[in-house]
Length: 265
Image 1 (cartoon, helix red, strand yellow):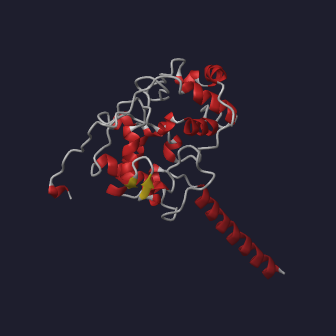
Image 2 (tube, one colour):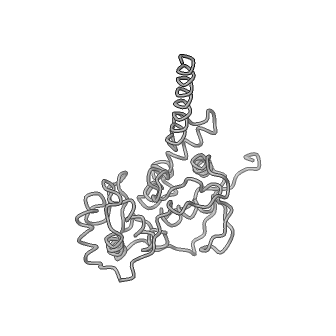
Image 3 (tube, helix red, strand yellow):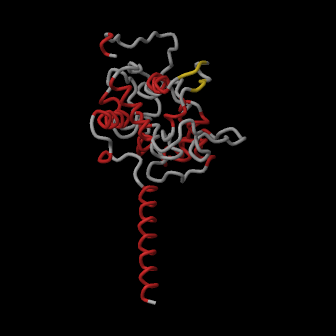
């Protein structure tokens, strides 16, 4: 009997160890600066995270809007239905409807600089671009290459069939949004992005489309109570925000990264 009890005790201990390990694996943070690889690769991942968290600080020459990547990628790309970047690395190359060509990850990052930040992409071979791609690759490390985005991970949702109530959206904005983004939509530098005006994203940005903004607002706003707004309320707020002026995207302007000597490669 004692032997049986002893064996059972060992089994229970082993089971507890296995379960603890499994839980630890499943709950580990997607980004832990203390757990990064050592050496230059870890430094690049860390830099990519920091650039995305405070883009104007690290790339002031590439950003015109008072926006950081994290404004549209909640938790610096770690939150489901918040512009998650998890698994994104393995989904490239891919066909891009907007540019009507096959693009790489760097192209997609460049689009964010051109539209959401109304600026200019860093050169593909630059330390900054490689760092951002390194960070996205790190977040995607447990996702098989080419795996599609999970259905419950995106924030674009079917819109209500009725037209939005813009006046209701303005009233809700005053109640739910103005405390952070300000009544004039200018936001707070370094904390809350501007939603319209000269320092906001331009008219070509994804967030300038009501289906994208509605879904993002529905699942992520207000910041202190994400998910508390109904789809209809998020729709009305988004419609009201998008009635305001913002920069126009100039698709004719030429952009060219700085040349590198052959020795760089």
